[in-house]
Length: 356
Ligand SMILES: [Zn+2]
Image 1 (cartoon, rainbow, N blue to C red):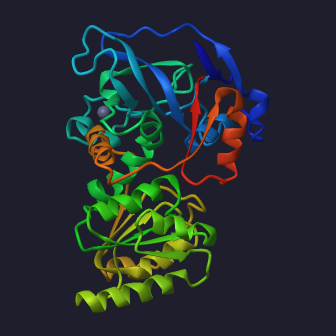
Image 2 (cartoon, rainbow, N blue to C red):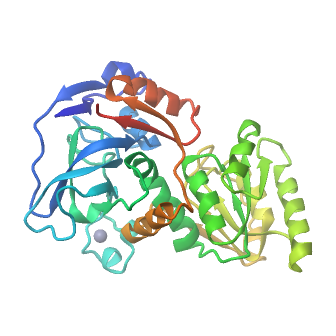
Image 3 (spheres, rainbow, N blue to C red):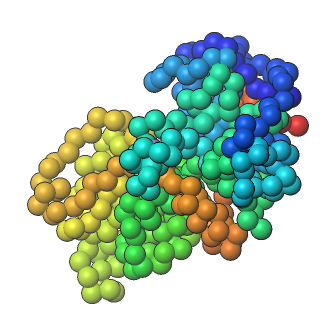
């Protein structure tokens, strides 16, 4: 089979130097595994970290790719829920399934957890023609959801669903602030909060504000402005007047960090929740603790999510309530261009690869 392989790091982001298309043996399933023919696979930022060899060194030779969708061509003897011909998408969270966290329903807290295609290998990821995964790490793609849409959804969909539904436990009528509304997780964050009947304020850079509104956000605010948070607060003040409640935000969906962090804290209502899953512009933030203890707010961390949350998200995609945003599709031959586009932050939505 054809696979996108590299055998050395590119700390200078010169992906063209390391990325090669190679011919490898086709995989056969272990008893608990399924093998599927990849139709589309989605890029994630950890593909770039892997090629850089920072912040962690990954197994070599390496195949990246955490989100792959395709048609099942073989199943192991112990597989009971998936059959040849099924359309499936990967759930890239490889957890042990036996530790206390896993058996408590918190597979994302498994200390043995690995992200497939990032921490796995050698030569085990989604950017190839055929992949093998444990039965528990694939999910059937429901009707009305294409391979492209499923590959563009998997990791970002489960991450966003877990943040808002699993961790923050959003409820109808709440005011939800989605930071970075046009990022992969932001696009789903907006749609999930609307699905739950929330009032949604999204932030983005000026050229992407319309995109937030198209996704269903009720308001969009330019977060490059110094006083963006004051604009958000003014919106909540008007909403509060209508609802007869207090101004402020009930839930903040955060993955940016940096100088935005403390401004976000000022927006939280008493007893409100901030849920964070990343720090794209800076890990080290300034925190005025008074905003946390005095207002009794919850600051929650979140990483990925559960298989069943992915199933829930895909169900609502099949009902047309949530959709993937696909920026572009590249062949393996043009994979360098695809990764460079992601690196430059030029895409809106997901960039996909296809083997053929
Ligand atoms: Zn475990």
